[in-house]
Length: 71
Image 1 (cartoon, rainbow, N blue to C red):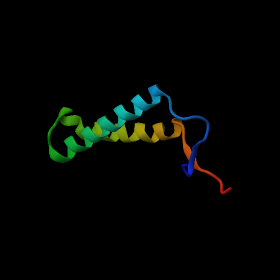
Image 2: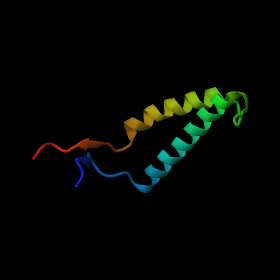
Image 3: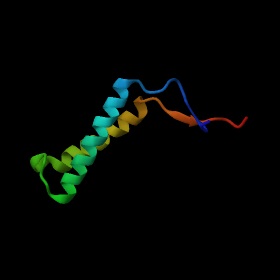
Image 4: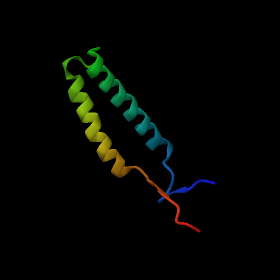
């Protein structure tokens, strides 16, 4: 099987949707800021920084996987 296990429980559907939306917004904001698409207007870098900050918080709140102890 896998060398990892969920600490408390696997993520539920709502948590998976939040993580997916977060990744989409972060990638879109970073790509827009880097390439000059201006999808968020003059706030591309601000949205990217805010999404990065939100990601740091999200890492602490979402369930985590850990390596299984050796048997």
